[in-house]
Length: 149
Image 1 (cartoon, rainbow, N blue to C red):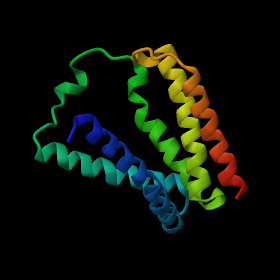
Image 2: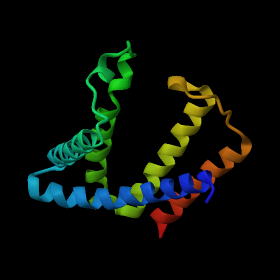
Image 3: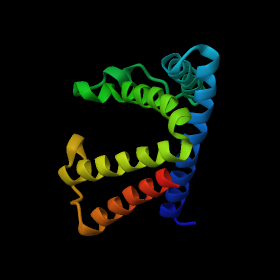
């Protein structure tokens, strides 16, 4: 198989995991008392799992954290993830999985195109094209159709 094809499969599987995770975290929120504690438990379990993996694979190295100066914003990815997980736990039961994720994907595509276009946060610049704009509009049309039907 071609490496690009494998990356596409990996992206599709990763995308498939998100609604499953959202549904699981919603159910968890019912058991533990709300979306924020659910996100906390989810991240704690994920952190423990990653830590065990790093230890077993001998990839954990404290020096990697302090090896070079870094901009402040590289440390907020986990916080953004926690906000996302908390929000999706609130959205899924109110909007349904399909509409919630349609809106999330629309937001992701619009933001991704802006980041690509301006090369924000060190990305390579990939200008917005008419094809990308049409794709985003079709995505938004899809959200409207999912909401309507």
